[in-house]
Length: 72
Image 1 (cartoon, helix red, strand yellow):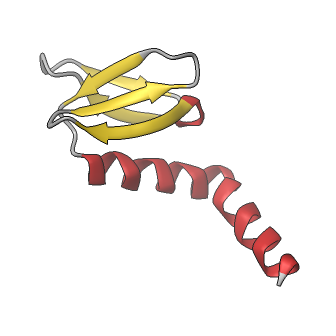
Image 2 (cartoon, rainbow, N blue to C red):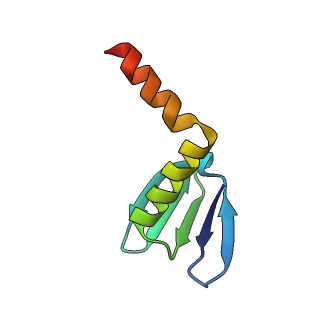
C-alpha cells in the first residue's frame, strides 16, 4: 500500500498492485486496472518511487530481477 494525497489535500492509501499507468497531464493521473482514474498532488516521480519501494517491500521487484538473471 502507498500513501498519496488527493488534489483537495485529503490523504489516502492505495494498493499499488492495482496501478496500471501513471501519467502527468500536468496533474499526476493514476489509472487502475479496473479503469478508474485518480488525480493526485504527488508528482509522477514520487508515485513511481513509492510504487517501487512497495514492490521491493513485498518482494515483487526482487523476483523480477531473479527471473531476468535466470534468462541471461
